Amino acid sequence: MRIVCPFCGERELGEFTYLGDAKPVRPAADAGEDAVFDYVYLRDNIAGVMNENWYHGGGCRAWLKVTRNTLTHEISAVEPAPGAGAAKVDA
Ligand SMILES: [Zn+2]
Image (tube, rainbow, N blue to C red; front, side, top):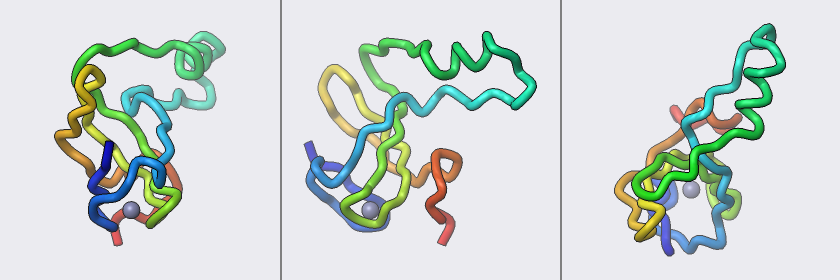
């Protein structure tokens, strides 16, 4: 599988780190234990198209949102993920 980084172009999968489902949103500090438990441990097991966070550690070190079909590994979109990490993706 190859990923087309919006900053670096098409690269080998080994340059990237999979970080999981991009959908869960970190709860507020006062959200309570149940919300934190759900955020940390509960994930949907999606068979089909999903948005995932990937980190391009072997390239630009940006966090990316990759839209991938988990059944076919077809990637339909790759874009910066400004909320996923510390990378300055607006530059
Ligand atoms: Zn990159």
